[in-house]
Amino acid sequence: MTVRRARREDADACAAVMAVIAEEGRWILTEAPVDVNEWALGMQARDEPVWVRSDDGGRMVGPLGLHAVPRAPGVVTLGMGLLPEARGRGGGSALLEAALEHALATGVHRIELEVFPENGRAIGLYVKHGFVVEGLKREHWLRKDGSRRDSLMMARLLG
Image (cartoon, rainbow, N blue to C red; front, side, top):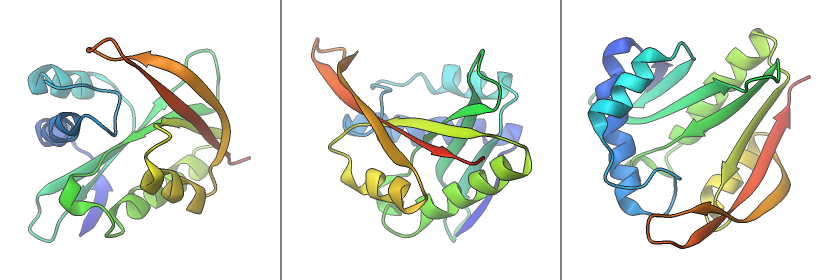
């Protein structure tokens, strides 16, 4: 498996991965169905660092992006996803390590993220890489079915 910076032509594969994860309906805020063309165009339009993880056959299995926080210099949010078959194999760690290396080299002060509280595997991954829970947003995210989801706020100071 390899990790590298994403290129413009990776946008369609990244969008396809996120569509699969959205179909699971459990791990990410994005809900199915995902308009992969719109998602890919949005990725291409942003000038933000993204890394991709590929399997041994070269197939994309997950992206990780760092997104600037408006009005908060030196702060970025992190978003990532891995296909189900790629989880638990070190792919998340490899993506996080690449992003953290970049963040340290470019003067990022803080990386923050949100994760659903029931996503224990992801929470464990983030804690392993120095992120701490800073709070809980109760019934914060409205879902298409009318329900609301909690999210944990986590962050790592690089400082």
